Picture 1: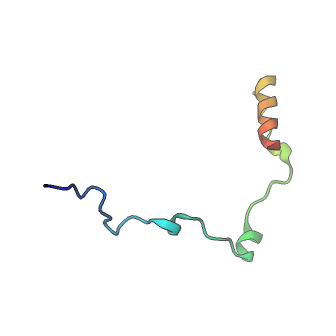
Picture 2: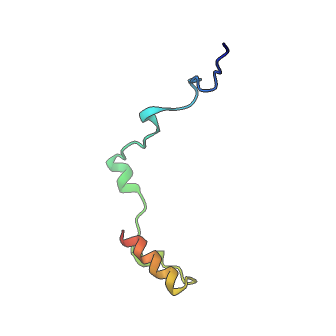
Length: 60
């Protein structure tokens, strides 16, 4: 009987918890960009329905 080795780990790809993002340090958080206002996310060309959907998404 021949068994495929397609699922055999090669050791080259990350797996498990190594795929999770690391916590940011205090210095990284301080250096991260921040929005001055949520108004900077406004998109002028949206229809009223699209604008309502976008606003609802921001609230969730």
